[in-house]
Length: 304
Image (cartoon, rainbow, N blue to C red):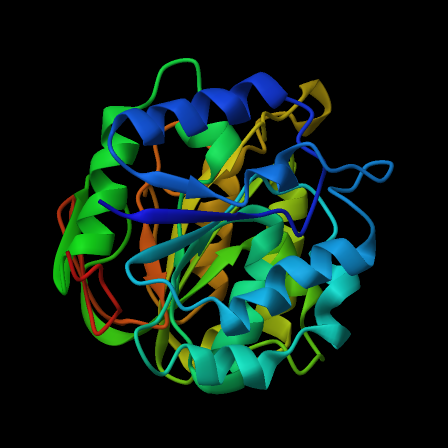
């Protein structure tokens, strides 16, 4: 089975029992979980001081075990502090041969997009140890889509989406919306032309989601894409003041402003159910009458 190498470049794992539960589940399934000591490491709200968390990432340059999945314990905040000191070129060179399968989301998006910007390094936006594999009940949908992405050179995800009919191809990229927007104007935002952008977020009100998407629009980033896919926006419920301005209203408004198709409804993000998507892979998005399919290829897979 696979080796799973844990890293903790972001926030301290406050739910230690979930992390331990995730390790047991993975071990019971026959996987070897390594570097477990990062789970208990703490410096205030962070999973260790900056030097320790940076070392988690830069040590991947010399990690040469086969069939290895690299997985953060959790997200939170902290990756942004490390961007200037990450060995981007070393990691890019490491990934050219027998690449590590690097998977995570949330705050880790900053690292994933930095790798994509550096040398088109493909990583997987998908589940992490504590919140997903360590959930009280492991979601079958999430688990199946995780292994589907990591074991198949070409695979598809389907859902009942909403949006205009489209059939487009391009590089899939994106991840957490707030982290993506935080990289505008930095060397770590990929300059993707004619891509398919997929975004998700948590704890962001609909007007904040709209503001971030409009920032991408005003920066000229959305107009250079073939399509925009909206994933999950967890804990984004409006309040009485909004008087009906909810996510659906925000999406409807966005469609009046953009010239590219906006397809919503993908289970992707911080919810218990999430697909796993290879950022940087080649993608084809097909949508017609609530039937949506996203087909991915060109990403690294397990060799077992």
